[in-house]
Image (cartoon, rainbow, N blue to C red):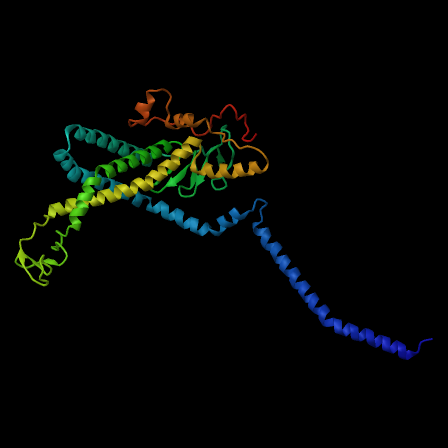
Length: 388
C-alpha cells in the first residue's frame, strides 16, 4: 500500500507539468484563433469577387481598369486632334510636292517620267483622300438593340443586349460593334464590318504614297542636305574661314608653307531665302514620308496577314487561346470564318467577278461589304464545329 507522500509527489509532478505546458498551450490557442480569424476574413473577401472563371488575365484586367478608363476617355476626346493632325500632315506633303517637287520634275525630267509622276501621284492622292473620308464617316455597324430572331452568341455584359457572332463591345464608343477589329484614334472611329475595307485601303494607299514620295525625292533630299552642310547658310565656308564685314573671307589657314598667313578672297554666293525654304521643305518631306512608310507599312502588312487568315485583331487573340486549349486536348482548331486565302480577300474586298478588281479595288468604290454583319457563311468543312 502506497503512502500519502507518494500520492502527494505524484500530484505535484502533474501540476508542474501542467504549469510548464500552460504558456505553450495558450500560445498555440492564440495562434489557432488568429489563423481562424485570418481564414474567415479571406473567405469573406473572396466571396465578394470570387468567380469560377477567375485567372491571371482577369486579375490583370481588374488591376489595370483605372488605366483602361483613362486611355478610353483620352482617346475619345483626342480623336478630333488625331484626325486634324492627319489632315494637316497630308496637306503639308501635298503642298510641298506641288510647290517644290513638281517644278523640279518639270524642268529636269523627260516627258514620259513627267507623265508617270502626274498620273500615278494624282491617282494615289485620290485613293488616299477617298478612303480616309469613307473610313472616318462610315459607321462600323451596330447590332439591333431590340429582340430579334438573329442568332446570337452571348449577351454583352455592358450593353445587356444580345451579341451576334464576331461582335465585340468597344469601351471607347461605349457600344457593341459588328465584326469589330479595333478602335482607331487616327480615324476617331471604330473599325468594324462596314468600314473595315475603307480602313485597310487607306492604310495601303497611304503607305504606297509615302514610299513613292520617299523614293522620288531621295536625290532631291540628298542635294538639299549637302547644300545645308556646305556652310553657305550661316556664312561659314570651310574650316578656319569666316566672312568679314566687307563681304570677304579671312582665312587663318591659307594654303602655303607659312602658317598664320592671312589672305582675302571673294566668298561664294549664299543661298537665297527661297532656296533655303525649298531645301528645308524637301528634307521635311523625305523624313516624314519615310517614317510614315515604315510605321504604317508594318501596320498594313499585319492587317493583310489577318485578312489572309480570315481574322480580325480581336479574333486573333481569341483564336490563339482557343488553339492552345484544343491542342492540349489533342484536337485541331479551325477558324470558322476562314474560306481560303484568296477567297478571304474576295469576301473582304467584295470582289465577285474579274472586273471588280479594277472597279472596286483600283478605283474608288463605296460598295457595301459582303453580308449584313449579323450572320456569317461558314466553310463546308466546319459542320457547326470548330475542332476535329
